[in-house]
Image (cartoon, rainbow, N blue to C red; front, side):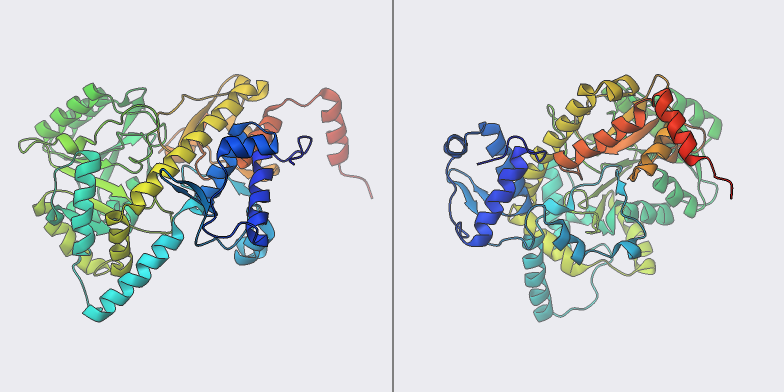
Length: 487
């Protein structure tokens, strides 16, 4: 039976108990579990507890969900049990090597713990054997032709694009795609318009090529195209590109409205600028139907598009695989530049990813991850709303998708003070100013996808303590304790 008085949530207790049964051999690989209603009745708990525990174990690889059959113990079990922090730490870099054991709130990273690593490892082994037989020589600088063909079909079906393999270039993540674009197409004196606040690593990539960056404001409808139009007129033909994140604007999470999208096209067409669309997390849309990428409705007579996306958000940040979709003429320039930089990508990884897409493994993982991340989004939003201290000092809109919240401070809360207090409690927040070229914003980006609900609750508890005013008596005791003593 589960301990209702314990501090550990019941779903976590159940998950650990199920793993213990598997490790003892009482539930062998391939064994089907009772239905959730039956299991809930046997344990005397709400069915939601059972469902939450089972979903977490499915995500971690202990259980497998088979359509129309049920839940069974996975045939290939993970290495460590749920909550076995000691075993995980033994495999991770030592604390001294890391230099810190702080909890870091990411800016929107996926949870690598739920990535289909076993399936990827098997696919990589098969790819390596296959490529060894064919000869592991140099390949196309644009990337493995097999994955380019598969990716073209994937984005055409899932995102409404209409491209061929000849219009796809594979890169080392989306940052690699941005840098490749900058070095291939930008020259000193060119200007790129970017969102502000926005993705600063992209700005640095453009500057690396010698281009200048002009910052355009963002509001509730995304990029301020009226500001962009005014800036384009002043630049008198020097505007080379406009870099946007229209699906979930980085960092504010807002979507670029249809009216702004149309206006952006007109501006770029008039001034001869291309649109660089960074669609970094298209798969993660939770509410309603997502807007199609702007590149999906590109017309032959309109402005040129450079569509950038990444598979790293689908799998894990360490899996460095992004891609660019654009016209053949731009592809040729990207190929030539890539050949000078690092010749080609990781063809073994690329071929393995092609297999995962063809087999539907990547799509199944995306559906599973989307469900998990939506639950985590809802959990942290409920936690923020339920706490008087948090709701009185923090505010954020419910994002329709993505992997992070844009949390704004109001009232008497101060972002620098919050960051400092959180750090003293071993919680690292990145202030919103890191997304600005200048100035300060009372906000921070709260990545929820990389943390379990239990971990998110802990983060919220720490934030609550940081935002709860100290009583005069406690403040006096703290001052007395910190006052240096005379020798």
